Image (cartoon, rainbow, N blue to C red; front, top):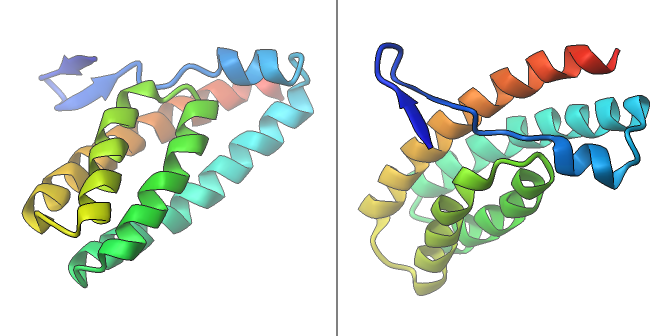
Length: 125
């Protein structure tokens, strides 16, 4: 993971080559999956933040688990250890403060990934 300290953002967090290979480079399908990803993230990030604010470990675990799949499809591998730790802490119902720290990383990574994928989507028009 490369951190750009001048803008305090992470670079190169997504790689849609797996997605492209998976669907045989079909541009329309890639666009549809990207749109589904954007919609899912728009639901998941507020939902997990809400669950954290309520110390709802069951929901934290469930959302963290489900987010791993969409991240993998979009090639956001840097988020996997964050999601796995959040899921494990949700399972053990412990350390909400650590979960809050991980959520901040999650938001940063996904913010950058969304920007990257939006730019990449322009190649599939």
